[in-house]
Image (cartoon, rainbow, N blue to C red; front, side):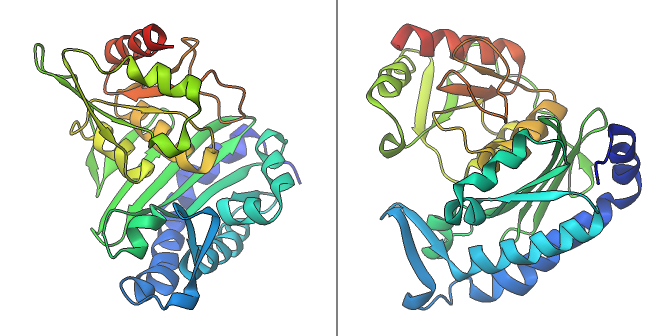
Length: 281
């Protein structure tokens, strides 16, 4: 069953709150009971010591996979843990069916260490375009939603990213060096300049939320995994921000982006960050 854009719009008009409830229930059932309660056997490494997965990740993704596809018949799920088990699953992002892009626990490292800086990310996309997103930080009880063309809200209040204060240093969160190539490291060095203050990023979803609420000026990221970016990029866009790749083009969830890329509080800041990244490349 193929669902067209009109049906997606109708779905979002009537069922957005049902998606939010599914996200909340996944967190209440599978994530928060394990927060600061994880046993050693419930934590595994994927590609290395900085790439962790827990029973909360796996079970929350399973819960969301069942709940979201039931809400929208004909849709499919691209989840971080399912793709780790079968990389071919990622191809659905470039398919013709509506796709739920899910990161059950974004910030697993923080979750494992008992830090509340993690969130659940869900985005709904069709034909490579993200139409809605849900960002839930259960340990902070913060829920942000964005619908394309209809704005972004945090706990019911409109989100506006605003613009950086003129003359003040830009605050930018960047990819951890462990996740960058030598070429990307050189590009990121372009941010080491007067008027810019950088720090390693935490949960990508929460960094995007910080931009959308005007608490962070920009991010500079070097990886493409859609589950980390789809929800947050729409949240930033609908709050008034912008995103650009090193090639000066908007980031595409379908891949093939020139990296690193940035998301920022406004278009002018996004262009400035890309210029600095280009100078370092």
